[in-house]
Every structure is written in C-alpha cells, then in structure tokens.
Image (cartoon, rainbow, N blue to C red; front, side, top):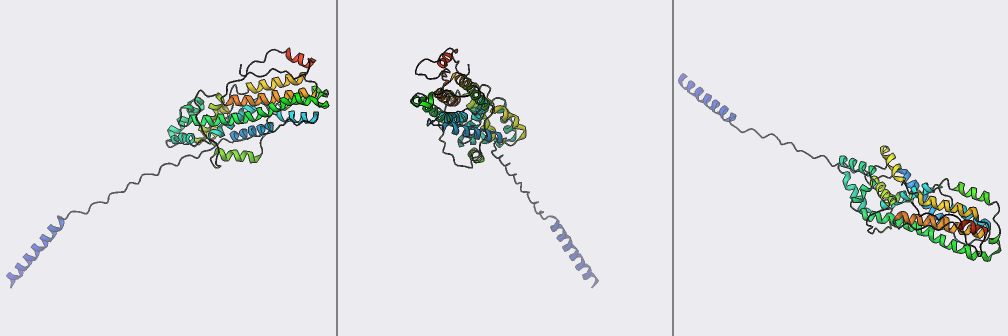
Length: 354
C-alpha cells in the first residue's frame, strides 16, 4: 500500500513538472504596434485685402465715374462751372494711389495668378520669405505663374477707365467750338480769380466712395463676387503701376492683408514714386488754361482738354500705353485774343514723366 502511494505521488509530481515546463515554453503574444497618424496639413491662410487698398480703389472708381459722366450739354455759365467742379476734384497723388489699388483689385480677379501665388502658402517659412521679397522688390512678382494674365487685367482696368474719361473729354472739347453759337458762351466769366482759386482748392483731396462701391470691390477682390474679367496675356516690361498692383495682389493672396506688420509695406506699394507726375502736369496745364480763359467757351475747352482728356490719358498710360505728348495749355478762339496770345507764349509742355 505504502509503495503504491509513493508511486502515485511520483507520477503526479512528474506530470506537474512537465506541465510547468510546457507552460514556460509558450510564445508570448506580440505587443500591439502603435498606429502613427500624420497630423493634418496646416490650413491655408485666408486671402485678405488691406482695407486701404479697397477704400482707395473705390474712391478712384467713383471719381472716374463722375468724370466720365460729364456731357457737353451746357446751357449757361453755371452749368460749365458745375462740371468743372466735378472734374477738378482730385488730388494727383491720391488719384495715382487709387489707380494702383484699382489695379490690385483687378489682378485678384485672375484665378490662375491667385492660385499660383497661394501655392507657396503651404510652407510657412517659404511664405514669409516670398512676402518679404515682394515687399522689398515689387518686380519679383513678375516671375510668378499667371503674372502675364494678371498684368493684362490690371492694364485692361486702367485702360478702360482712362478711355471712358478721355472720350468724355473729347466730346466736351469739341463742344467748346460748337457752343460759341450760343450768346452766353461768349460772356466774360465773372470772378475769374476766385474761380481759379476754388478750382485749385479742389485739387487737395479725393472724395471717398460710398459703401456699396467699397463692398462691391471687396467682393471682387476676395473672390466672393463672380468676375466678368477676361484675362489675356500681357508680356513685360510692365509699367510701375502694373507691377505694384500685382505685388499688392500677391501679398493679399499670401494672406498678409490683415497682418499689422505688413501695413507699412502696403502703404509703400500703393505710392508709385512717379505715379502723380502725369496727373500733376494735367493740373498744372488746367490752372494755366483757366488763368487766361475769359469767356465761358474757353472754360469748356480747359475742362475738356486739361481735366478729362489729359487725366484719362494718364490712366491709359499707367496701364501700359506709351506716354503721349500732352496738349499745351491753349484755348480755342475764332480769332486771336489776349487769352490765346498769353497761352501761346507759354513754354512747350514737357512730356509726362520728364
């Protein structure tokens, strides 16, 4: 009995040892492999436009609309004076700044250009470097994809506005001859010195635009409003106004329009160093013309030539047209008069930008 008991105990022990040994040889379950999820790409910065760009563009468009709306339907001296007051109410450098801003709004309506610039916003370092390059050298933008089509939209916008005003001026200028059939047009302008002083005073500011104009241009610049603009291809060289318009549009596409650190860059780009020279010459010729004009029909000529035609041509030139030779400050007369003699005695008018 005792021997059998020991034998059973020995067998049971061996079984237990074998079971323990087998358990220690099992392969452990593999550790779970952690799933690495790549972080989502940083969102692209929104396209933003510096507020002053829209305000200046709207003021420019509003003035050009007022000037282009002048017609030669003069019935008396006061009607001439009212039109002259409308047309002369701009400060040359402000209007030149408005032209740059208006061109920037036009460039932002080119999807190829905007997307070409925004492709560089995915890398924050690259985005910042490009923005700094553009701010330091506006011409840097002319090498970007879509530059030629954006340049064409800027040139088209300025050419369109300039031609509208110039066309109005040509009609008014022609009426300076036909209106002489009306007796009132030959009457001497009263208070000629005061009239000249008031016209000069009008040249110190450009009236702001109304809110609907501002909001409409903002919508076009931000792509919120469908654009009817049709890009073409304008090859360099570009005028300084076109280049600066494109540079402003590029900084906006890069998302710096609402960055306070870039406000000085936008302010600098809006002022083209020679942009006001053509308009300054227009105003100088206007003042000279008014100084020697005596009957009302001569004021009609001054209005048509030296406000509307000259100002409109300055805008055409800013877009990409060759600079024209401005007309001398003379007035139309059927026979020589003291006004015409004084005007003809003035030195030849230099070309814009000279």
